[in-house]
Length: 344
Ligand code: ADP
Ligand code: MG
Image (tube, rainbow, N blue to C red):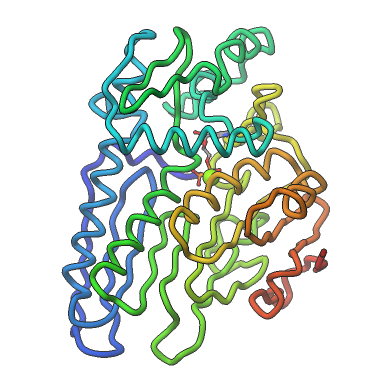
């Protein structure tokens, strides 16, 4: 289970390797409640890594729900009054509203009070009654979020949590920094969010393992491998944060229809897209939303949603389902025990 790390200052573990040619520079930080690793190459690499860590810290200061000073917290604690939230948060809320609309409400940043009721923000886990969840759900939905210019107002009782899109958005910003610095290659892994620029120094694509959700503690247990060049990949899974009570497992991805952990037959959803402006945020939002929807609806959304992305679904009944656009970019993990299917 992931530990709450938000209260710690940003940790920097700087591995300074020689800055020439094919030797990578790598920086690991803890921010946004997860371990982030940035890897770059070339002369500017070291400076870019420092900028990347400053950028994720800036975004954490803006978007954290547990830091009372953050813009998100100021909005959440305003008791319905309008708050000068700034252009960046307002734009991200518009983006979140768009994904909410496109996914029929499966993506819902207003589940914050529901998530708190389960104890996911404090690690004091409990199972709320359906009556309690229903009362909280009365204040959920994007119709309770009002963005006007740089000002944000929430209806009384409504709170927001950008946890399902913030790391993807941060990955977009980090890749921007890489590009602005003229880097040709590098990658950023923000928890389950990966963004890759260019390819490896040897000309091969970056290889990214998709965690086997059945073995979350074995960092070398994969459900499959992705081969990515100029692309992002984001995984949401029920194994990433959960607690157990009376023999039942309760995880952190909530179904807005019930307020309970989504029980959709999936163990994880990985969304892959070309690295373009906004694609990290898209992959992050969709990985959460499509987890809620389940296999059938997720594949329908892939076919008809009008967005350009591919999927790797790991199901509770032991299948790994990949969409046709991943041909040549996905490989099964040897000996994983899963059955592999491609859909078109
Ligand atoms: P992680 O942050 O663990 O990588 P996700 O991107 O799937 O995983 O985000 C899950 C987080 O988003 C939860 O911890 C919660 O704060 C919030 N959340 C839970 N359910 C939803 C939902 N249906 N839509 C949007 N956000 C959600
Ligand atoms: Mg997400």
